[in-house]
Amino acid sequence: MNLRGRIVVLIKGLYKEKKEKKMIIAVDLDGVLCKDMHANFREAKPIQEAVDVVNRLYDEGHTIMIWSARGRKENDDKAIDDTIKQLAEWGVKYHEINRNKPFYDLAIDDKAFQSMLSFKKAYEKMRGEQWEK
Image (tube, rainbow, N blue to C red; front, side, top):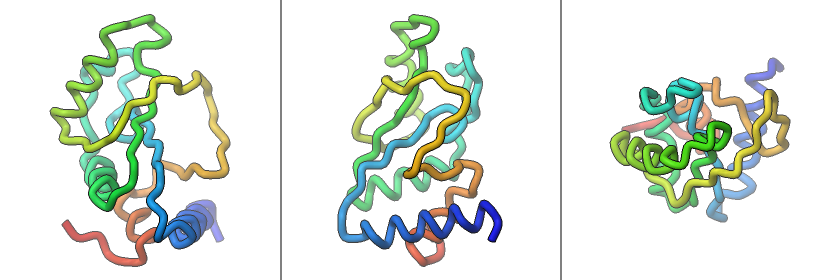
């Protein structure tokens, strides 16, 4: 089984295990919910498929935490206000923003999955049903 297949199996198993329990889901912002623009994040455009899945998970009662380090490296105090405005413009539903994301080049985490998977495909695998708008 390739890496993608193993990730899908992991996601499906995790979701099945926690099906009755509402989850706290940390979602990275840049490169996941929107195109990664690095220091030019104010020009970022949303990835609609990702926004749709996050909003559906929110509507299902899961707690959505946006996880970002925007502005921390540059000591940009206005970054959080601009980020909140962007999320509203994009229609992203969430409960909180956590700005304590560490700076790193690679993350290895037992509860993570690659955002490069199609969000809709990952949702379908977790739920065992086809994505319908």
